[in-house]
Image (tube, rainbow, N blue to C red; front, side, top):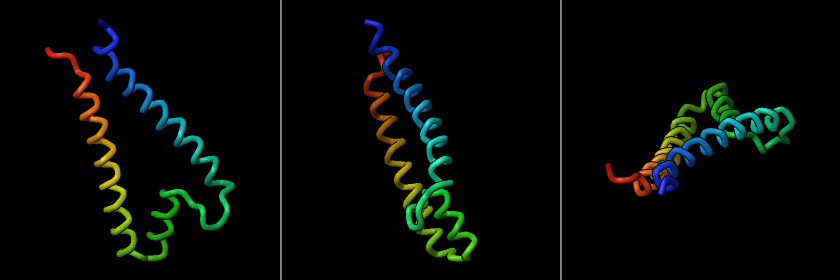
Length: 85
């Protein structure tokens, strides 16, 4: 069956499209966000501008850990559905 062999590619395409659309939505949202509801990029920038290096490093570590978990989950999910070559 062809569906299992292209499922990883379909998920990759969907994830890429979702991330692009999400970035566009966040850009618009950041222009009209209420105080205290900033997006992650704005928070990083504010911490950098205010010289709060310790908080910035801690938040960066958490962000990297979160992205590592998401990436590993995607990797193992894609590998599970990969056909034997």
